[in-house]
Length: 146
Image 1 (tube, rainbow, N blue to C red):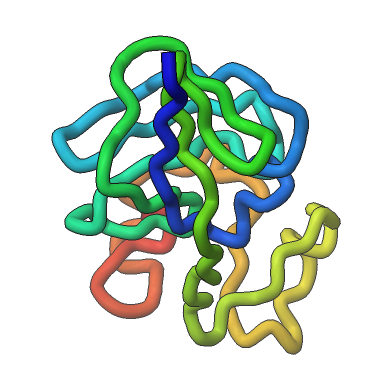
Image 2: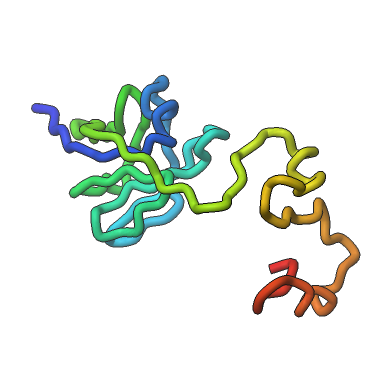
């Protein structure tokens, strides 16, 4: 059988996963314009394979044709399924919201002082708090715990 290749535009956030060793994906959700897979990788636990009509999530691969509901692997510069492969034809960089702090692996810093970040960071736990106590406690129209 001849191999079919379908081009994709891949989020730059997925470069490590796409260029790594092939690994199986587990389908967790499907619509007519997107398929969502668990990857088993902490850097990108879920990816979205979608058509141009879908919302382009930061972890997306954009393609004209979605994989079917059988075994799919990722790695080696794309997705593979039976005799079909989705190969990266171009990369795109997801937009970053203005004012969003840079990601950090230091969780102590995340839940410590928010000085200099320009945003209010969440408390580490809401244990013992009643939802009624949070209503009206945040800025704007949403409760602090929302």
